[in-house]
Amino acid sequence: MTIAEDTLVSVYRAADDLRRGQSVVLRGDTLLMVTPLETLDDVRLKDFAAGVSAEPFIMITANRAKVLHIAPEDWAVVRLDRPSWMSSADLGNLADPTLDLANPMRGPFKRHNIADTDTDRAAVKLAKIARLLPAVLAVEISQSEASSLIRGGLLASGAEAVLTSDSTHARSLKIVARAQVPLEASAETQLISFRSPVGGPEHIAIVVGGVLHKEDVLTRIHSECFTGDLLGSLKCDCGQQLRGAIAEIAKAGGGVVLYLAQEGRGIGLNSKLKAYALQSDGFDTVDANLRLGFDIDERIFEPAASMLKALGVKSVRLMTNNPEKVAAMARYDIIVSERVEHSFPPNPHNEQYLAVKKSKTGHFL
Image (tube, rainbow, N blue to C red; front, top):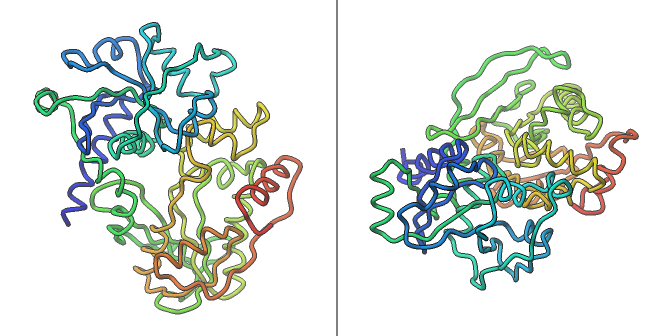
């Protein structure tokens, strides 16, 4: 295990603690103790920062700040005062836009006039890794306070390790299992699973035919979609894209589908369902992600490049309408010899979704 991989262990352990509603310590250009707003209750709020000299504050992303009419300057993360009247429920409402209409915010909020630090950005990134909304309660701590908190059982992680975790994880992926699994569209199909020795998401390569260690391999990069792939949801075209890709690859004589564990454009299933709830209130798929505090698309495609390299595939004919996938493969030294159009007719439930992909995210539709 490399030093970077060993450090990544602390990131995933800290993210697991955040997911359970625990506090963690982040070391960087500042020292912070943070806990997620989404899982906060009154007991944890009362105990947070007990024995710490500084006053706690709120951290949210610039995207969420704009929704709350807080000018974020050009910062990715914004610090806000935590008014004494705010209960754990109030803090949860601040983080979760699906609760905005039922619980109108009681602002205005006082923004700290301080640019975000690497540690601030790492705090909300760690919440994202934990598959939580990117909003935390934080407090600056001294070195002695940090040491005391760690001795008391809090986990610590480095800000740089958090901010580089996606790339470190992608580079550490290894093949851990493979098996022949005949599919309806192609009996000659092999599933190859990838996992990092330090944890994190696991990905699958669906390999049709004998295409490993070849060039110009017909390839689809597909992010998992529980609702579309498994349930046949009509809100998106993901299920059609997955099954259609396997069928077209089989028809062409072979190829690869890289099935990435990046549900909901990388925000996770729970947050994706919150985005769906916002879409029911009239927001489109892009606006919903931004209101939740996420970027328009949180996915990364470096894992796909690492998987292709492990499979001996250096160049691909990429089945996609997403220009970012083409650009990403070039960044990670995978040659895209051809972009192959891959689209399906809309239905009454996903017409707007597809129109937004074309108008706001530049898809070739």
